[in-house]
Amino acid sequence: MRVEPPQLAHLEYLGDATKFAALIHALIPKCTLLENFSSEEVRLFAHFMRVYRGEPGMEIIREGDGGDFMLMILEGRVEVHKRDRWNAQQLLASVEAGRTLGEMSMIDGEPRFATCIATDQVVFAVLTRDAMANIILERPSLGAKILIKLVTMLSQRLRQTSGRLLQSMDKTLSFL
Amino acid sequence: MRVEPPQLAHLEYLGDATKFAALIHALIPKCTLLENFSSEEVRLFAHFMRVYRGEPGMEIIREGDGGDFMLMILEGRVEVHKRDRWNAQQLLASVEAGRTLGEMSMIDGEPRFATCIATDQVVFAVLTRDAMANIILERPSLGAKILIKLVTMLSQRLRQTSGRLLQSMDKTLSFL
Picture (spheres, rainbow over the protein chains, first blue to last red):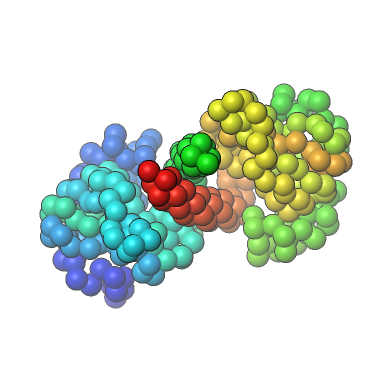
């Protein structure tokens, strides 16, 4: 039985990611998570993911929602927005095929930090927390490889964000 | 043969963490990394760590240094400092037993983000990247548990830091 994340019910389900393995393999140079993956590892990993398609303008992830999955963009482009204190959507980033999104909520189960909107037709692979747990149980070395990649990616983002925070605080202080 | 991280050569080496297992176990309520660890898992984990003691005022980690290890404070207190753009040390945090430090460099091998200084006599356990790799190989389920904890911790810090960055940018904008 397929258990679909309810947050994805408005999107078109394209099935198991296994038949997208070649497309996923071609993304390796653009995808930090897949760095150093062999074809065999991509094929194994794909077996645990499911693919969806969204039309331009559709929300794929909504800020504040629950949702214990991450996604990897296979085709198309996605904008990342966050509400500011006047509740207006502010564009944080525009990302394309190879980029992963939603890792933090997949891991820690906290509400989504930002909203992701398809800017053109977007095809993406979804990895749920349950699927991640199954990878760790059934394919421990692949599981460890993915976890190490996630730790590395988050670590690098935390460095960048902390650096920007210090710069910004510095800038704020220089106004005082 | 013991291969000591050269950055720790000025500190007193107290041996394998196995004999500190009871002390480490007592830190569980204060230590996010050890959350939900059984006594057996603490004992196994301790086997892969080494313990050092530093005197008040000693640098344990220096900003900009290489260093592929993380540490867990077992006793004492450590201040975390970062140089500002005038090269002056700014206090970022003061942390105590149960807190882990240096996870980012352990994982991604990038230079240290901040300096950690013992404010009193500090005893801490060190986990090197090689030891982490051995845990993953020899004790895959413990390895996965530690990696999941690291991902969760970094994810939560990234949320907090991103939130503070947005607030700070907002504050900066409000000055313009």
